[in-house]
Amino acid sequence: MPSDFRQEFPFFENIKLDSTPPTTVYLDSAATSQRINCAMTASENYYRQYNANVHRGAYELAQKATKVYEQARSNIAEFIGSNDSSTLVFTSGATEALNLIANGLTQNMLNGKQIVVCESEHHANLLPWQVLAKRFNLKLTRIPLAENGQFGEEQLQYAKSLITEDVALLAIAHASNALGNIYPVETLCHLAKSANAISVIDGTQAAAHLDINVTNINCDFYVLSGHKMYAGTGVGVLYGRFALLRLLTPSKVGGEMISHASFDNFEAQEPPLKFEAGTPNIAGVLSMTEAASFCRANLKAIQSHENALVNYLYSQLSSFKHMQIYGNEQNSLPIVAFNLLPFHCNDLASYLATEGIAVRAGHHCCMPLMQTLKIEGCVRVSIACYNTFQDVDDFIAALRRFVEYMTVSDKENLSTQTTT
Ligand code: PMP
Image (tube, protein in one colour):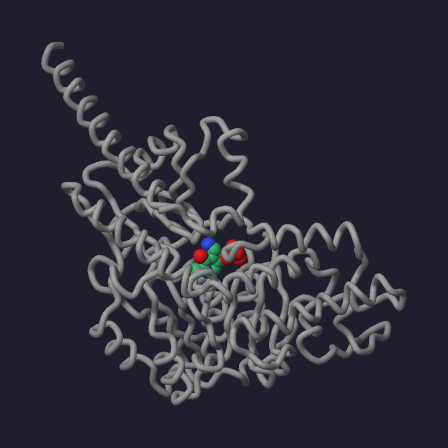
């Protein structure tokens, strides 16, 4: 069955022509998704029709740019379930948003001596907390996963026992980029609230696949990146409770974020502008609001299509001998991480590349997770709304050829060794 969504992504019209070898099967959307037509049109229209800086000029073009930019803020706030657009800060991506929180927190905002993170966090949601822990002499504690990277009832009970009065901050992904695991963020944020701890949710991978509602999750901060949800690169958002945003120190200062400046001092504006020093990625923001509308309007259809594809992928992969799959099969994004023993994940991904199949191999910016799994890396197949059953079939057929190829070369090596 073809994906009804594929036609919305111009990339697929061009791929066969533009690359050598042609990338015909794109299964690396967790690294970055392809861009949806409406998002690219929104950026282009801005550059072509009303290009001007925001929050500055009195002339009509500048007013229009500002109006559309601020409308995007309201739309994206609504997309993640906030009814207050002043809770939404535009950033260059999730990494900047997480650093903005970590660098802006003051000792007074932290009630406790521990930071709790999950073992599968992306480095973007781990390193800023390492820095914060060193700055305020806090202990970094992990929520461990089961042996092969699963998160289930046992892990949840353990996480609950960790989140006590001693915890100053909890940081966890809504869903893991390496494994796909979806974490019970509502339950965890509820516990964090009871423990008087700040909660930070990294929604980067969730945005294109799940219904996000920061009001229901009841988190203090939530971050995401445009390029993982069919919009442009270099744009993302930080959602924060307004009262906390007011307390957070801006780590980036400069033009447009002040209410008053003198030669030796300044007063910052109220959030969100307090965090948006300099000229923002206006075209990126406009692409993101369009992509968010697409995701929201089609969420059910997207989920059912992706679930069908990932179930099919699982059934195909499990027919391989020596297949080791990591992470949750249920309660997961359409991401599958695996190793096909005894082959190295990089050899496998390089072979697939020669057949025009794009998957990722390595540590997926989750080195501590790889250490827990006792592996150097793994292959990750990540699916998005534009993928098709044909993509999965092509990938599986190439995987079979890889096994054959490696087995034949092993035998040849063996016979060469025995004859010499
Ligand atoms: N968190 C997660 C879970 C991610 O997958 C990524 C990107 N791979 C990031 C954070 C960082 O996002 P960005 O590079 O867009 O800032």
